[in-house]
Image (tube, rainbow, N blue to C red; front, top):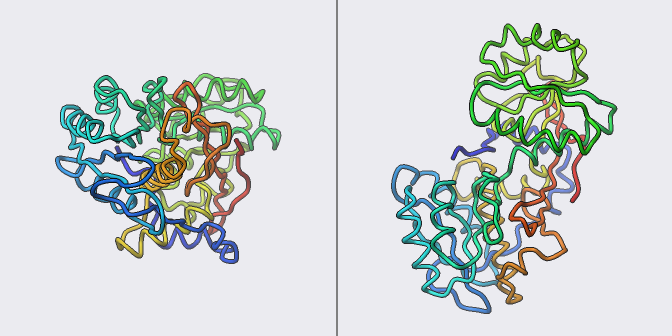
Amino acid sequence: MPDLFRPSRRRFLALTTGFAGLAGCASLDGLGEIGGTTEGPGKAAILLPLTGEQAQLGKRLEAAVRLGGGPGIGIEIRDSGSSPDTAVIAAKAAEAAGANILIGPVFSAQTKTVAAAVNIPIVTLSNDTTLADRDTFVFGVTPAQSARAVFALAAQRNIREIALVAPPGPLGARSAAEAVPIAQALGITLRPPVITDTPGTVLAELQAGGGLPDGVYLPSAGASLIPFAEALAGQDTRILGSTQWAARDLEAVRALRGAWFAAPDPLRFAAFTRAYEEQTGEPAGIISGLAYDGAELMRILGQTGKQTRRGLTRKESFTGVLGPYRFLSSGLVERGLAVLEVGAGDINLIGSTSI
């Protein structure tokens, strides 16, 4: 699973310039002592791939989980390895040791097998919405959450027709499918997606669909992003993007000036990424923020003795370093995200979604 938000230090500083006076609002309250046996009103375990092919990712997530200090419950960290079988072993051991709830695993295949093997709620760090179930909550940032944030602002600003353009692959397919109900709910006409790996044909394909739409949604931040944007440069259409964009240095890309994209709350994430970088020497990513938020969630619920499905699905939302979120009884998560605009050498906050 790729790190979805891994900005360079230069890009991060550009993003947070202008918010310096507010940065203290995004404090990192203590997570409690993490590791070893949990003592206190609740027990929880977080499953991370500390060995195997994804060990490097697991170590980054472990560093995020260990940030903080102060009062709170401990959280037992268990190695889920990189396969479904190793994840099941870790999950069963955690349940046998008294864990009330699991944060993780990270990967979709691991989550499926763990969900079938334990009888306690799971908050997976995956963003695979097909995993959502009564006791399996999908905590990862999903394509639907990105689309909701940027489409909501688009609707407010009179963008009534949007076309999704993406290269072939799972991200484009999922983004297209999950954008449909979002657009319908907002009164936006969503054209059939343009799935292509040939940027040179994008403009012609869009025009063949009835002229250029008000907005073009480019959810992928891979190698196709800048060529797609350059193909649309100078056209009378707003380019829109997903949280995937936050992994790229885009402020110097002329073709993307004026583009809007979904992202974590810049103030809260600023405080987190500073603390993370001071500890590890590396920039943080969205998935690192998810791991931190998962640990903080367990501390909050553990202190009140509510590490249960009912505690997760309370009416009140939670607030993490990525922004506000709420667990639904379906296993899905509502998430508030910021919307940022690419400027001439900077990135600016222009909106956000509430939940």
